[in-house]
Length: 434
Image (cartoon, rainbow, N blue to C red; front, side):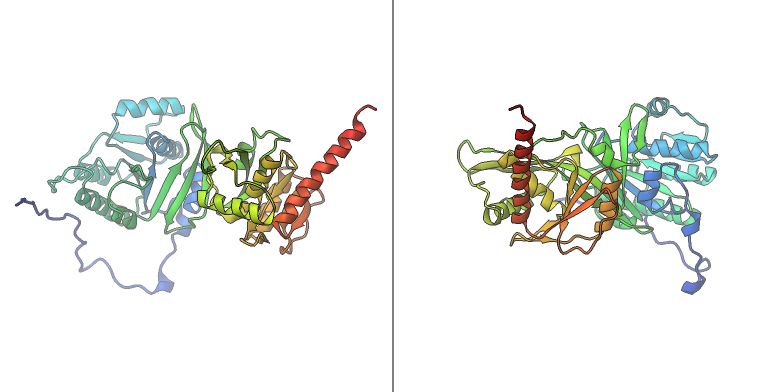
């Protein structure tokens, strides 16, 4: 027999009786025009144009990825605009936060640091100060004194979130919650916390890369398709207005196995380099290894290359890497990945001035993709001269500098690659002495 203590939840619903009355939808005032600008354009983009008053935002990410740095930057920016921010330091001491603020190069009296883990006292302080924004770092370390369970338990997380949600709605104060992440990459604790908040954000990136990506997986006030790109510097996170230049900065031209694809993250097209390497398998079953690309999708592309393009890959190890730590999930990168593999297998470099856009079917056909015009505009703006696009697309060239090459099948694209090698050899023989 095991004794269990039944706890009484403190997350009671507010009493009814005098405050709320039904309203017609046409009479409800929109909060769209009252968004709070955070001073970081990439952050505002992900939120849908700014922070809505009374919203509860949950920010998750791997340890050390920059969650506290990002929110402290936001707090300091708001303090520069004359706003007051309550920063609840439930994990760090005020001295640690002061050191981070000194590193960010900005210290302001508008940021009030409260080293407290008891949520009851946090809400009392917030009621007295009535700040413009509240940051709770983190939700797993605060607790309610009415509950006997330890901080981070299911009941504490649920009830603490309910109390903060009620305070945010009643006072129209936006609140940021920092959430820990498990080994699987999900925010630790019950999923009910994600359902209770208005916005769920993830700060992603590799520790060995300088850039960070802020992604919304839930947003009641905007789209979940937008991303924000930041670069980690000595003075904090810096907005990256042109991510394509960042991801293509170290590209090696005229190298076999390298292709540039145009991925669409939300409404923003981003040019990314895809690298492929084929090598003879030493023993056993050849390996298919992908970094930043779906491994199952890679096996499918290898099968299509073998069946419809005539490439002999049965005895070859195939490795695919998406540079910059980015993960490609949309099928529009299929054509670029497949041609990068063909380029490495044949030793023929792809055109360094070309981008490759298209989805591949099991029959080897190149299918159309959405928002093709937007992708082509970004490629033309960055100086690319040619674009391999699906033949089914009805898009004219958007500029005189960008030439569109329609491709109907993968076999046609591989043949064009072989023809390019023949032309290169002929030009080389014409220029050589004798």
